[in-house]
Amino acid sequence: MSTGEPHNTTDVVIVGAGLAGLYMLHAVRGIGLTGRVFEAGSGVGGTWFWNRYPGARCDVPSLEYSFGFDEALQQEWEWTERYPTQPEILRYIEHVADRFELRDGITFDTRVEAAHYDEAATAWTVTTDAGESITARFVVMATGCLSAANVPNIEGRDDFEGEIYHTGHWPHEGVDFTGKRVAVIGTGSSGVQSIPVIANEADHVTVLQRTPAYAVPAHNQPLDPEEVGRIKADYADWRAVARQTTTGFGGYLRSDDLTGALEVDELDRRQTYEERWAHGGLTFLGAFTDLMFSMDANDTAADFVRGKITEIVEDPAIAARLSPDTVIGCKRMCVDTGYYATFNRENVDLVDVNATPIERFTPNGVQIAGDVRAVDSVVFATGFDAMTGALDRIDIRGRGGVPLKEKWAAGPLTYLGVQINGFPNFFTITGPGSPSVLTNMVVSIEQHVEWIRDLLGVMAADGKTEVEATAEAEAEWVDYVNLVASATLFQGCSSWYLGANVPGKPRVFMPLPGFHEYKQQCDQVAANGYDGFVLA
Ligand code: FAD
Image 1: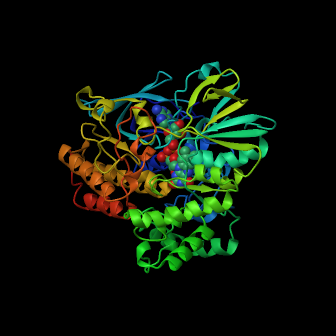
Image 2: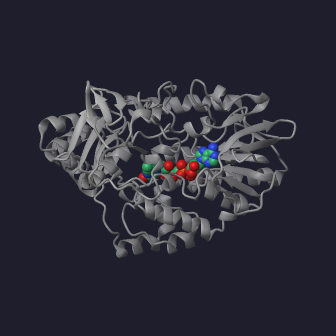
Image 3: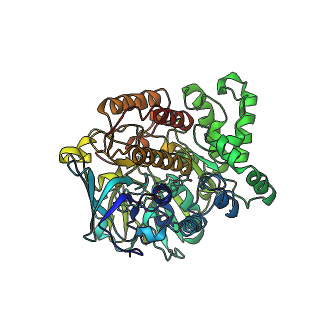
């Protein structure tokens, strides 16, 4: 439903009304341009509109997982918990949309199907599934890194007579699992968050695990008003410190005397890990400087977490099955509430689908090693076709009608993760080649939106109508991203960072580690008159 008058031209078409699309609309309006947002969902929120599964929560503390661009906004909004729930984040995003009067620029329930560049007109034509066609000088893809659901193709799915859910498309009215036998497929972040909650409600839960996850406890709690007051008194500075980190959050925990894990003796090392474990959350991996660079150092953290799993899980065989043997941190770590302890419950069992794959669905369950496990409901917690999936699902054509899909056939190519050679006036927010999913994404989104807004402002001031990354800048950037990634342990396992969860997807490490350095590079490019771009 559109709340605004339909126009067939605008300055900027923005696809997606999550955090990125909303802030982009606000930003383009702020420099006097017109913008129109198309959103496939019926409301704002993106990730937090769609992912309503039980236990859905943020893994970045609420005071950091929020916009810092407006002082009044950050002062007036009151978070209630350290790690906000999906409903609370959605309320926040709805507040942002209302506060900045953005809804009249958004067309909901409308999927963008194509975006084609017309070189002669220096304009994009965007078409939607509602049959609308709109012309815009610029297109910004705020389509989300984790918005295209990944559903494994398991034989016989249509034969299954029970209910099937995907965590990323959860029914708005909720699901009552009371008295049900449930199979949960997948033990990434969504599985780790939802399994304990589903197990509390359901009659029985079968967890189908391909790769075990490393999870650190959230130790979620209500926020202490005094602490909030202290942070808010200095909010802008506090945010600035976060922007100087590699992940865009946790700056307040940074210490100048951090060392390598192998530079301290075993007792000190263990104590540091215990402190981080007791603190909870993703900053566990910030305990030492070398955890993502040295395999020996990484092993010490991995051993510590495996030790915790063994302590928590009573059955040693199940503990062993739950214990990952991969590099810790090469997948985004999970932040959990009672995940491992859930496997001590009598109504939960764990199947290793690497050893015994799911053979097929039957009308009343899933067949594994010849046996049918009867279940009433199946939950796919199987994640997303990350970073490129949402773009792949749109027919995007640049100069000469070249499809983006063709250009990216061997993996995504970008300059700074914001632009693509051959696709002028087309931007991606938190695109491949930028830190995006390795960070607090609100910080990355703000940085990209503001950088794009400034570029559009400069173009307007200088009377430029077209901007395009050069082929050389793009090639150098791709090499640079590979070089940075190869110096880390991020490529040490089959992760969605590499596209490894989607059959046939090229194995390329897509995000760039290191937010702070990246931001400096982007600022430098702008200061040098947009090095690596041609402004015509
Ligand atoms: P999204 O929120 O994904 O929004 C993109 C929107 O684009 C969607 O609404 C989608 O419907 C729309 N769209 C896509 N294609 C089209 C199309 N063709 N036409 C029209 N509309 C389209 N990040 C963190 O930093 N910390 C966390 O703790 C965290 N937890 C997460 C938990 C889950 C379950 C998931 C899935 C992601 C999580 N993320 C987290 C990442 C999260 O995606 C980002 O933090 C952030 O919400 C992304 O905002 P966005 O606006 O870029 O994209």
